[in-house]
Image (cartoon, rainbow, N blue to C red):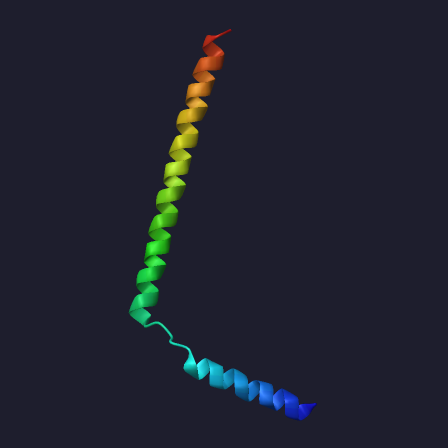
Length: 64
């Protein structure tokens, strides 16, 4: 049982050595891209929601 756990740990570390880890600059660039796109999509969805809510409020209040 202990031998199997040790072998599993060796296999894990061997696999981690083969991983092509990204550079710090690549990670930071990707992070800022995700932040920028998230903020842009959030502002876009907020503005569309605001326009629709004002439009529907105008339409339904005007039809009374």
